[in-house]
Amino acid sequence: MFDTPPDEKQAKAPRIRNAATLIIQRREGGRLRLLMGQRHEGHAFMPGKIVFPGGRIERHDSFLVPARNLKSEERAKLAKASSVKPEAVALAAIRETFEETGILIGEKGHPRPPARGESWRAFLDYGVTPSLDGLRLIARAITPPYRPRRFDARFFTVDASHIAAEHRPPEDENAELLAIKWVTIEEARAADLPEITRRVIDEIEKHASDPASPRPTPFFRVLRGKPLESEL
Image 1 (cartoon, rainbow, N blue to C red):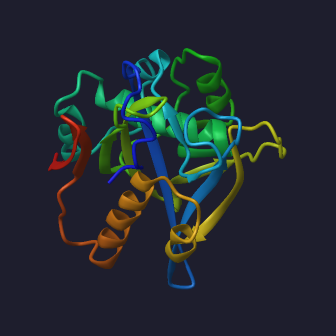
Image 2: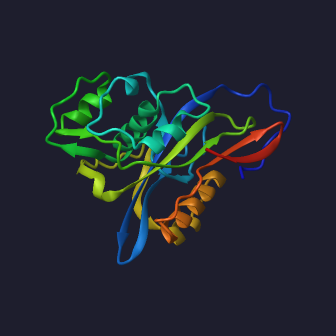
């Protein structure tokens, strides 16, 4: 389920940080494509790996009022075994995607809500208010204890029709996410992926093959040294 432990004798596990990831999907010529990029080689966590945009939840994410809220079933799943406000988790996924790709998920034409934090103020400057009703929680995973960074990550999907604007920043070799592009599931699987990303892609493919059928949301973690998969 997760990458093989590099050293079982590693000292005390790092603190778990709450995080969120957004998987933007679109259909092109009948094929599903996903927006992915490559993590900078200088990162301590998963350097050089191909991933979806995402990152840590910040305090500012708890204060912004979205144009539309989460669906009730998504909110209920996010609230399970978590002290983090569900809306903050979803907003973090949208904010991180904006920071790393320049893509704004939301709606135009709404009154500008109050915002804290430079990133959210920059987001709102484009006349877009984030909207959460298109996000679907597809998986949750806690990084194993043996990794140099640990995250309690929630993975969301959203259709590209929810993109309200796009402002791709100039290419920067020091950017957190490089070589951002739309890839097919086959292309993604052939890339250098973290193992958890492969599992999430499996879930995406299951949903894509039968979108009308309700599916449980998997929760991946390691307990007492053993991989565990449960449902939210």
